[in-house]
Image (cartoon, rainbow, N blue to C red; front, side):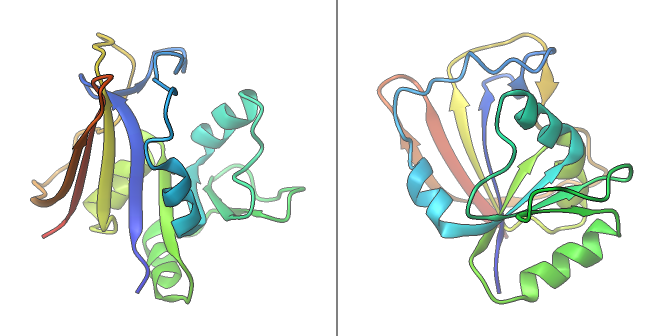
Length: 170
């Protein structure tokens, strides 16, 4: 069965962007395993707001991947690789995991991540913690109703202070 993986960078104080969505604080001097990860997935899941932010930054979609965007307000796209999903995310995600294919990347944002976490749909969490305290911004993890215990499966440190932490469901 395919895995849903949250693969994301955040600040040491749990933010994925500044309040205005700016991510210029991210260190992009190395690949950090990005190409290998990107090649390991064939499907991308994201919320509408995350998609709109990507479009504003000049990226319409993740090329070569099926892009599913969860939205209650938008239903059609001019891009073949994009499909908007307005149905129940849990049922959709379970069906998607059961299909043949490579792993699935959960891009964000925070509300979608919370829903997937609360429903037990995330199989792995891979964080790249950047050595910066933003003080405020858009949080990665929003409050959830129940504690979720994870198993550490990988750690890696980089010379510039970034730490990679990978966890799986127990």
